[in-house]
Amino acid sequence: MPANLSASEMERFEALSSSKRSYSTGEYVYRTGDRFLSLYAIRGGSIKTRVLHEDGREQLTSFLMSGEISGLDAISTDFHTCEAVAMEPCEVCELPFSKLEELSREIPNLQRHLHKIMSREIVRDQSIMMLLSSMRAEERLAAFLLNLSQRFSARGYSPNAFRLLMTRHEIGSYLGLKLETVSRTFSHFQEHGLLSVKVREIEIMDMLRLRSFVGST
Amino acid sequence: MPANLSASEMERFEALSSSKRSYSTGEYVYRTGDRFLSLYAIRGGSIKTRVLHEDGREQLTSFLMSGEISGLDAISTDFHTCEAVAMEPCEVCELPFSKLEELSREIPNLQRHLHKIMSREIVRDQSIMMLLSSMRAEERLAAFLLNLSQRFSARGYSPNAFRLLMTRHEIGSYLGLKLETVSRTFSHFQEHGLLSVKVREIEIMDMLRLRSFVGST
DNA sequence: TAGCCGTCTTGATATATGTCAAAATACAGC
DNA sequence: GCTGTATTTTGACATATATCAAGACGGCTA
Image 1: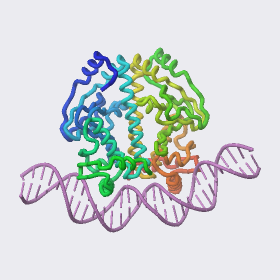
Image 2: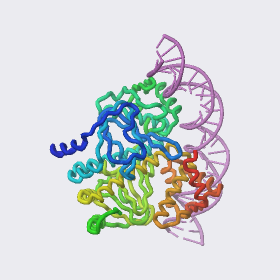
Image 3: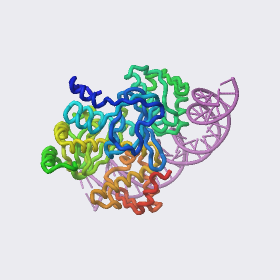
Image 4: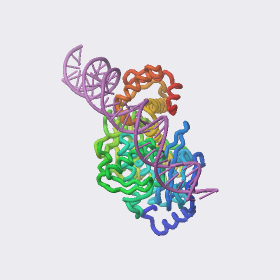
């Protein structure tokens, strides 16, 4: 994953990231309260992360796909503050963090890469904050679908047709909406010819119009 | 700011953070689009950061006080994606990032400290996401005031009485509410004896009841 | 294949917050 | 200290989304 590494540096990094494991659907990668020892790099499949609030509220904080990293929030406290669950059969690499720090002290390009990954997570969170604080339901869902589409596309899958691995409730939790609102908004999009929705099977029929939805208010 | 450094390490870090500058109210510390070269550590006073969305929407993303760090989001792109403005006369240290990386390669405790700061920012953003996606106006404002109170307290100021440096509009932008809603919510709190509000002069009259507001729905 | 459970859709209604507008108040510059 | 501008408060009303409820659908298991 890191760029700009020489062959020998790459080798050292791969030695560190060698412990790959498979997870089946619903299996936990880590749980809230677990001691923080490692970051987790998704190699195949996808996972979701969920924060459990003291008062019982829960929120989905990310849907991660291959090439993405989970667990960055735990560095600050040495304990995982959220939990990560496989949404489908997955391959996940465990990256022991103290070894990663050690190696990144020796390989400046790796160090910079790690910093960029953490910073990118901050930027991502800020754009979700923007979504939550100023977008209407239709904009939120459109932004969500376009984000998925773009990430599927970057991984060689169709940007237009894909299967959602999450429930309406989970989408709502991620977008700050109730599941009924998510469902209704899917229906609106379908009525307007933007999407074809067969429960979890989504086909984007009019990408441009869907894009024009985001940030139109 | 970093902990656990030996005297000589501390000296090297201070050499790096020596370029302190004063800013007067309203002055920019950095602007959107500026090349990313440094992080900024607030030494006195406070600043706000603001993201300008393509479509003209703007959002306040943080209110920072002394001891806090600004600019972490820019690492990912090498350009500042938000702008930082002094809210009152300020002292701000510029920390050249490549030098900070260099030094943190040599001082593991500094490296770990930097990672914790970035991770803490991610956790902070996630708690704002939670606030935005699931709290009602009263909960949001109560959480905001309690957060300020706690941070003032940590800096040796009264946790009960303080002056807001931001407008209702800015509070609203930060909390995902319209300014009228912020104003009305202040009035409600005052009617219920939780606060005394004299425009920007806030006094918390009933801390416990204010706390019980957050996460009560 | 039938039956069951979780998920999803849709409708009717409630409610919190947004919108628009006007007046009151605070603040800055002269 | 006065005048003009920005901010804040408050009211009346609009509206997006939540809530409550019922039924439909889909996928699993026996």
